[in-house]
Every structure is written in C-alpha cells, then in structure tokens.
Length: 272
Image (cartoon, rainbow, N blue to C red; front, side, top):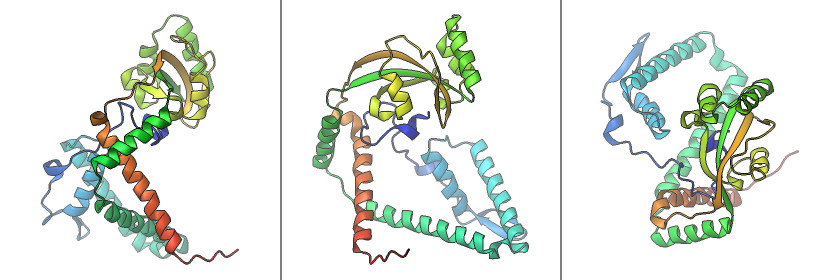
C-alpha cells in the first residue's frame, strides 16, 4: 500500500502529503541547443526540460545522475522511434489508434491546465474548504500505523513468525518490505480509516495499540502485516499549515466541475 495512491482527497490533513515543488533555476537549460543527435535528428533541450521538470515535480532530486539518465532514455526512445518508422510500425492501425488516444489525453490535460491557471483562489474559499474538510472528519479516530509489505503469503507468514520470535518490526520493514514506507521502518504516520483501502482499514480499526496482525492482508500491492502504534481522536492542524493541501482540493473540484460543464454543453449521441 503506497501512501499517495490510497489517500483520498476528501481528507487532506495528513502531515506526509507532499506539496507542490518549486522548479525555477533547478531545471533551467539552454533551450537554444539540442542535447544530442540520433542519425542526424536532434533531441531538443525543451524536450529534455519537460521530462526533467516532470521528475522534479514528483519529488525526484535534480542531480547529474538524473540528467544523465533522462538523456540516455530520450536517446533510446528516439532510436526506437526511428526503428519503428523504418519498419512501418507507425502505420499499423492499432498503433495509430493508441497514438490518437494519447493525443486526446495530452490535449485534455492541456485544456484543463489552461483553465486552472485562470482560477484565483481566495482565503474565503480556502477557509470554506477547511471547514468542509473538518465537518467530513467529524469526531473520527486517527491511527498511527506501520506496515510490512511482501510479495507472497508465505513471506508474510515468515514475517509474522519473526515478530513472534522477538524481531523488531522496524528492522523487518527496512530489510524485507517492498513498500516505500520501509525507509521509515514501515511507518505510515497518522491516518484516518477512510484514507486507506478497505482491506487495510477494516483490520486496522479492530487492532489494539501495540498489536500486529495475526494473519497477512492481501491487496494488489502485495501481502501486508500491520502494526497499530498509537490511536487518538482526530487532531486538526491549523489552517495555515494546510493551505497548500486546501488549494489542491479546490483545484481538484474545479477540474471536475469544468469537465462536467464541457460534457453538459456537448451534443452527445449514444450509439449501441
């Protein structure tokens, strides 16, 4: 279970939520020059910058290693694209259909991005969203949860056996877990029940503090062994601490409303 995948935008007060990453000079490049030529075709610096920015926005540190990896990947893609053209793969109907779908996706996201750029979010809107979020949470409990995720039930049962034999949960998480939370000894921090997927939350809410699961839980991510570290009533952060999260929640709703508006204005004829 990866943190960011299963957390809902309905409750955005978790401390580990990643904010927007400032990009500025860290991703600057000379857009007048190409970064390489493949069989005479230039790979532009602008293309390089876009991939670099996308990685930095996801939290990857800008480094010489990252830049080198991106350059190698862009060269490999260009080589393969030229080979596809040589073999006339780019004329295959199935490939053309996939390209058309990808073009739709890029255009859709570009239209939405342009719309969101025009949105000016006020303090009043953020305060209203803050109140809405608090009302949704209500008098809920928060759970300080840790997990170990392994690829098989057999491996999970071995983890449970090791815990019973006195091995430390944090050490097993760092050594065996396949989830990014292993870097924190398996800790997921404080979560609400509706911030994690049902198979996990259904078990989590029935654990006592200090208890680990007697049987592993299967999800699409693997087999989970849970430990409840602590439990408390929901503790709301101050308004100023969550402004970025509130902006993201408002923009997410604006995105949904914009798409709904466009669909409503379109002439749609269902066939079959």
